[in-house]
Image 1: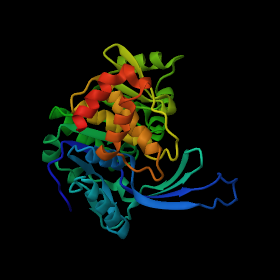
Image 2: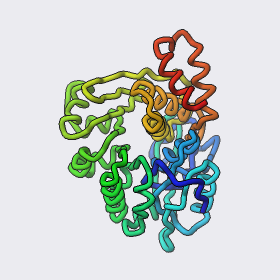
Image 3: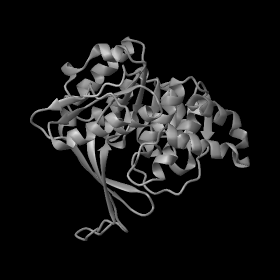
Image 4: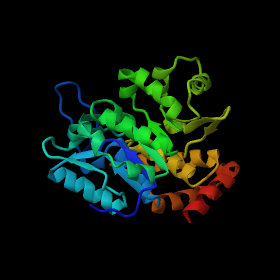
Length: 332
């Protein structure tokens, strides 16, 4: 397995083979949806975030579990090409790799059907504590908390990372919030950055405004929240300050992986010591780029640089010039 360098960010979660079909409209039950294109690529929330971080030049590793099959070989080879350290990915001799079938309609919205396969069998005893301790950031996908023994692996990694002083982020996912809300809340005191969307936030706390909901999350232990708002950008809450970061205008083609790319942009900004506003802007740019192409391709340095240079010349973004300059200086 490729090992491009000791990872400074480690993502923990699923690795899947994604089959992404673009159809003209979603069929009624019993009907047919004939795809005009079909793409295959490595996927999974943690995998998407790890690939985007690596493509931005940050040494990134992935903790996951794949089968001993051709799908795993294809996914791992693709991640190696992107610069992700896959030496921490476990291999299952019995259960096949995870697979996702993703249907995308012309408005860019995706519907997912999945088999988690070997992912759910991630072995907590097979973790490499030294590799985790040597990193600076641990990013956990909420899907990793759904089933045992993967859930125990995620909790063990979180404990190792917390004791070693790593920054820790959690990208929720609605399923874990609905199925295990109490577990999710117990993790908040250990999480430095939480990435929810509006549905997940609403399932966690009941409030008559987004700002009040964010405040309640802070009251139960969270320090920083990056709320994904899709086409409306994002809302960041930290230290009593709530910021709305506007979205970049794009034509949405495929929202697959956009939230994962958003998380990568925010983590990259924090990792590089950027201001909170710049982190939110980087996150929004990554999410926009991911949503503007078919197949949920993870954006990287070669994508983000021209994208932000073009916006830096627009009057529309003059109030964000210093933040754009921060990101550009870091990437250049």
